[in-house]
Image 1 (cartoon, rainbow, N blue to C red):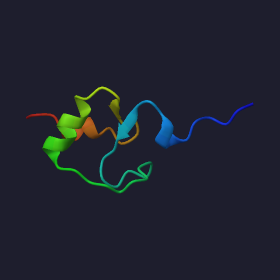
Image 2 (cartoon, rainbow, N blue to C red; image 1 turned 135 degrees about the vertical axis):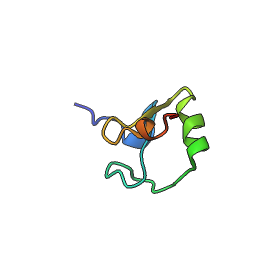
Image 3 (cartoon, rainbow, N blue to C red; image 1 turned 45 degrees about the vertical axis):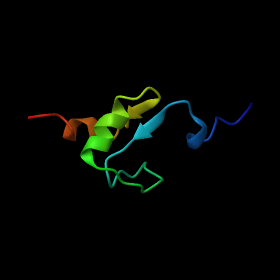
Image 4 (tube, one colour; image 1 turned 180 degrees about the horizontal axis):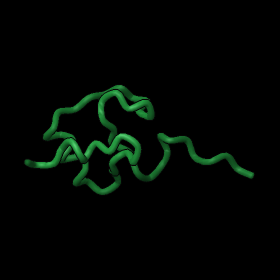
Length: 58
């Protein structure tokens, strides 16, 4: 049985909130960058920290 692909080889990249324990990179971006990233194909919000909830317009 083959090992699953490492996280950095997955087709979909995950966007995390700062401080998410699942985030390995530690790289940060501003709000506009995060909103833009989530509109790109191949990038999805982390299901654990749910960064999109903090990006909603009020």
